[in-house]
Length: 170
Image 1 (tube, rainbow, N blue to C red):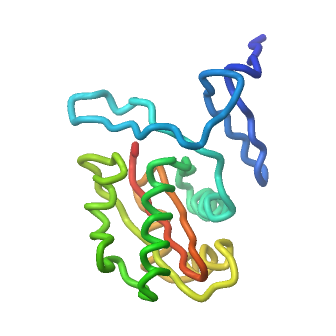
Image 2 (cartoon, helix red, strand yellow):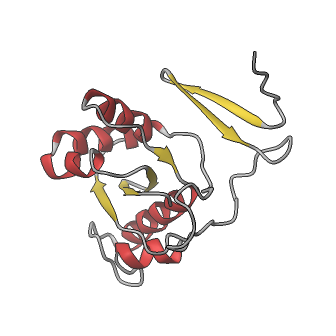
């Protein structure tokens, strides 16, 4: 029988999904430093992960219904998505590139996702992140992003602006 010590991991039960997150000590900090990987490092390099938010739970339900593996929430992508949501709210613009915020590729690099590709869903005017996720799931292009070949995601919101970024090993 295996025994999991509380000081080594934290289990979070969200809508039927059990997520075990390794923890270096008895406390969890959400401001973990960004982890990057070069093309010579193994694909199993550790990345900072955080518990799934409501959008992530919705994404993983959709992915499961289509036979896709679940996404893992990434602290790097959460920061990148939050930054872009704040830029959109600041400028009142719903766009993948806003003044001073750069495009998706530059955001990925800025938040520690070097040499990564990704996809981004943006929305405005919904009443919650769950409502934005439902709208994305109902739209073929956005649904294609959610069901894409990605392993990690991050979501952000500011005011009525919502952003999700999907990538792999970021």
